[in-house]
Image (cartoon, rainbow, N blue to C red; front, side):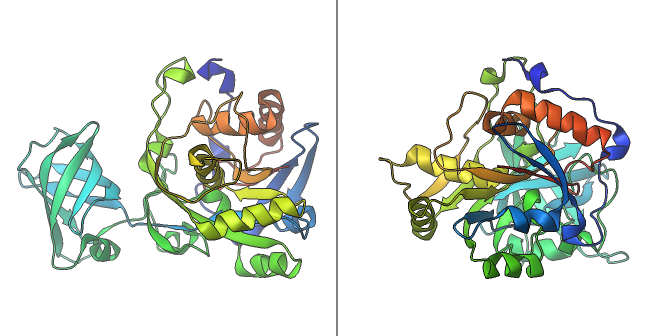
Length: 349
């Protein structure tokens, strides 16, 4: 297996830089994972593919305004992307600057309100691998300051600045637990009326939490995927989710993960369970799912289109077969589907 096995050609104009006007107006490419058979639908048609005995599992993480723009005391521009908040006033961040700042360097981040001269001050405490640790000097806890100083951390392939609409559209309608620096994008297609229709059909829902880290956008820099070091992310799979999954399996339903983050949460909990029954798990996961992996929990998934040669291409290939996935992506390009975070979706069943 090579990273290049998961390469596909994508015209630049198929990258979605804005969401559709309505969340459910995205297109949905449905694929039978056994046969590879494809069907072209609208996202709202997902309802027709669901059965009353099924269980949908969503990731309820909420995205932080994690991108900070400012300058060093010397005047050099600096950009910080919060990876995770560690204490009330300390965070691990990615830093972009002309020169790597040394410990003790003061940074001053601008308000996200045009014309406001208020600034958020921080000090570089040191490095942790590719990341920096910052201490922030703020009256409130850092989490409460980010709405005033932080920007929506749009992915690097969206070539524009964040706008007011992104505050709403780069969150799922059911987002709850603050802590992600990227949205669980498969969930962006669901709106309240669709969720109500799903519940009315008798389909159950459950919620896990995986705080998506910026490492989700890091490319694989080795040709042998098994040499790739996965980033670690925080997850919570509680007792209620485990009971819902056990009940779903018992009634012959399908566990349908909404997004690869839900997949990774459930399969991580299975990895840490002591027996056949899924057990609650709260902690870190760096699970890497690639072809050859045997899924313990997930029977179907809703997912967006992923970057070429990425770990997520490997995950969906592990689930539905590499040949089926590569063929489906080729069809999606031909049919002008919209790709990545604000793009269209797939239903693999």
